[in-house]
Length: 91
Image (cartoon, rainbow, N blue to C red; front, side):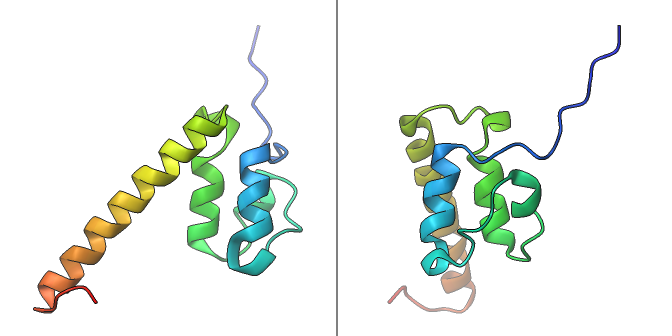
């Protein structure tokens, strides 16, 4: 028996919907599924939708918060690297 491939048209979960409603002032609040989220032309939004998806195991508020906190730390580290490369201190 062959497995049926999972559709990319997975409806957004409640955590993805929160982000879609508030990201860039609700610019993407019309997005209804992960496939649409991957096509909006905003890499960060698409990345967040992927990270908070059911397929990635984001199944509760605590997991969603932990994921976003990890992203925040990683982006902060990248920003520090850019400041260091330019010989600047963060403002």
